[in-house]
Image (cartoon, rainbow, N blue to C red; front, side, top):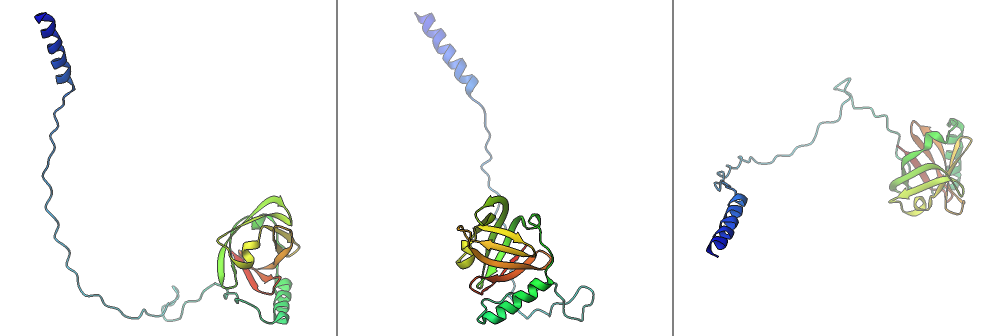
Amino acid sequence: MNAKYFLAVAAIALAASGCQRSVNLDTRRPAPLTPAPVSGVSSSNLPPATSPATSSSPASTDFPSAPETADSDPEAAAEKETQLAAAAPEVTRESLIGRWSVSTGGTSCDVFLALTKWTGGYRAASRGCAGTAAGVSAWDVQGKQVILSDNSGNQVARLYQSGNERYDGTTTSGQSISLSR
């Protein structure tokens, strides 16, 4: 019985010694770094922006003027729309597919236009929109105009192309609205 006991203890000891491994952990830590010297903070006005071509003239921008937040005069809104319609090129549905930034009523959000058939034309989805833009769920093209509609097919806004990747127009309540990329 001593031999069996001895063999069992030897087998366990041999198995345990095979599972051990030698690990040498370096417990030394690096010395802390010395903080960089800090000088006082100064402030001054920035120089006026300049054009890359000439450093003495103010920079010119290709950005259109921001749309008004609301049109209080319905006649002025109608006249503005007439001017946009006269200068607007023909629009294709394919050129409108994708994400657009919508600005209306002093707020902006994203609208996604797809070519999936939907009530009022094609499917539109808004993200982060409030007010009139939140109700946009459909869109379509009619000649030179982009029509935005709600989920019942009621027209919400009418826009015309006013620049490269930009459409301006009015909502049915007479408020300015723009789509841009």
